Length: 276
Image (tube, rainbow, N blue to C red; front, side, top):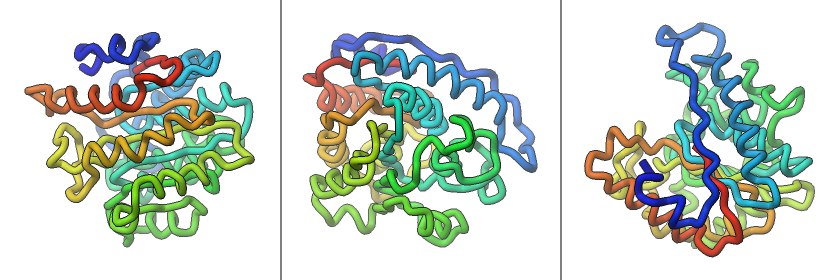
């Protein structure tokens, strides 16, 4: 849908096409693994190949998702490009830090950040090998507004991740937030970093075409101001944008908003590659 709004042309991007996900299978929730674990694992590896190709020659890779589980394939591809340790800026209204036992849905999306830092026993937590895709010390989680009382949130507090929830972060200038995020994600001992943006970080008054809206989020201008220093940092390998649902956007107003935001962020950046 974003391509239909002329996104590739407006960004001057190279389009690497779609990585087609496998059919959804686990309608009945498995007791001991994320839904569709095997297929998400295979998909993540396919996506990693495309991301690595898109990020070659220091092009900025833009991945348009799906749900937050695409961060796994994005990180795997970015890690190949970087050739070493990665950082992660995770901008989301939800922590996505549950294990299989803690998740209320059983979906990999609800566990995406946990899986990225190696939390839990799922094979998805080891998609990159015996080490996690990213060290928790190199992760900043920005903008969540999903509470602090669950086991997943208690684990998040002990994880080493820099947690900047919306209630604490937004009285602070977005420039300061971006600097704090880069201090973690772009630390001296990383070779590059990835940016994951779930559009439900925006307030539902701004965009409703998401699956789990949470009131009290960012405005479009605030998100652009937060992301601009990140995407322009020389260590930024790419960004994934997730959870936009065209089925919830009959008048395409959300698509127009997102394309305008991406144009504001990325036009003028040296070279951009796009995949979905």
